[in-house]
Image (cartoon, rainbow, N blue to C red; front, top):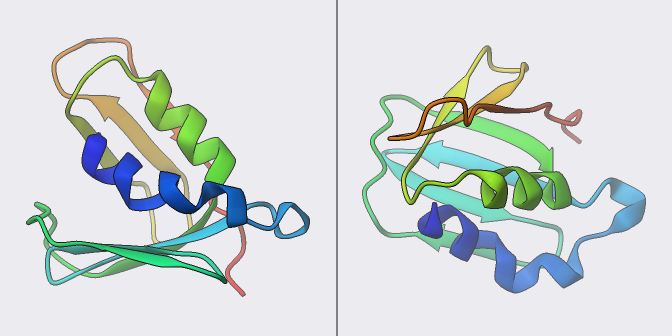
Length: 105
């Protein structure tokens, strides 16, 4: 949870409200990259994910979703490449949250 939050919270105030507070999240070679039009952050910790994935989300909604989960470890699942992101607590039940991506530029 902290890894994800620390990857984008420092530049939340630079997100463009007219562009739905767009953040691009990409997973490639077990590395997490979060970027906006004005900033980017790469996580150098290993992320357990086999494959490559890129999605645009509303950064404000992402922050609210991740912050609401009462666990230090969260699981993120992808329904399809262009579908809903499913957030789930690692240890607590009934902590699921959904986040719909926004259309990629």
